[in-house]
Length: 117
Image 1 (cartoon, helix red, strand yellow):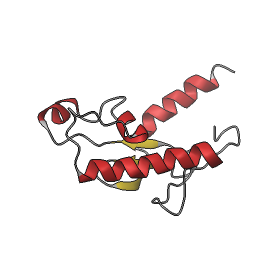
Image 2 (cartoon, helix red, strand yellow):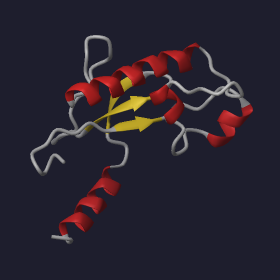
Image 3 (cartoon, one colour):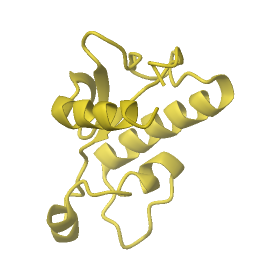
Image 4 (cartoon, rainbow, N blue to C red):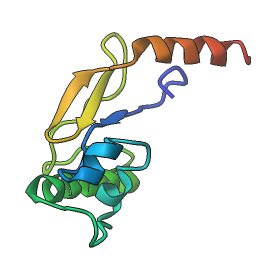
């Protein structure tokens, strides 16, 4: 998206539930869905950290759907994913901006994608 001149925001979900099932699964693929959509099932241990992360993520997603930018006055600043640092928003026990945790993987994807032109 950024190479095409469009804004992009990238997140890195790291929250694992504080119960045995959460520790076993960790922050696996699709684990962020209950947070983004506020759909924590009764069998999921949901504590204050989970509720706070849910509020933040729902605000980000709603703001992005409304304006094309996830940032608002109600949420921590989420910088655009752009050179040279390619910042990523970590969504976990805390919400904070980090350096992209997988730059080598992103480089491989960019090389693969460039070869498709």
